Image (cartoon, rainbow, N blue to C red; front, side, top):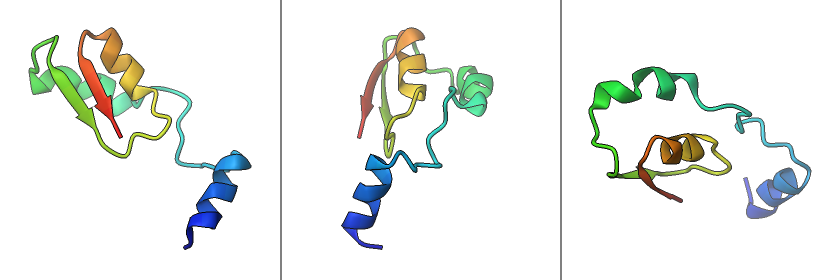
Length: 65
């Protein structure tokens, strides 16, 4: 795939991997990781992820790329 393919998909809002809601697995299993609130969470390949907002609301610092 070439770069232009993905640019066109983004502009046409044809991004099937984007979820409208927070990932339910994140919400179910996050506490099991026992990460202290206030800590920093790195979210690679996040795109338009709503997961980052959810993590912020839980009290974490979030870095997404």
